[in-house]
Length: 252
Image (cartoon, rainbow, N blue to C red):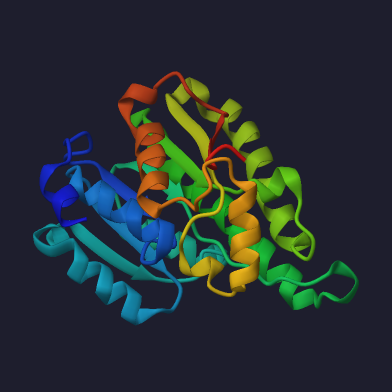
């Protein structure tokens, strides 16, 4: 990552980018990639202070362009306070990456586990996109990218809440993209398959082996590979792509 931070092209110099869930896993890789390309990055997180500080340390000399904000994206008032705090700052990119899992079969799933996953993954993304659109409409430019999952299309046993949230994200992307296209705001999604992050840490070695065998490339992806796809959709080069979902799955 150090080499990337020092040698990346500078497509986002001067642009303000927001990455929710931006201090760990895929979000961390996305935040560092934007910093490497000259962006001012606002990375949000819900509670892990150690991960936030580790991101700042990893950013090195680019940390002067890194802002860390702790709040719950599923809280409408907290989202509004965050955007109000930005004032007239023109935001060019929002990456809705915040996501959690609370697995369990639907027949015994608690209302809390259903609600928390939908609130963070889907409702939180909608809240952040709502305020992003208000900001981006003033400059008639913007890029909104959701990090979704093949789970929304394929469905996985024991993940009804997670799958529903991810399918909802794709529907939201399609609808919102039509609402804002005339304002030169694009809305897309990146759909990572099995990526080597802490979100998969609870998988047994047997399951990891089983899942790896289903991937045509026979490996899990790297967070940096997802970040590359996100940065492309967030770039000016992707100006005629909207309402789309780019799969980063190794061929699943």
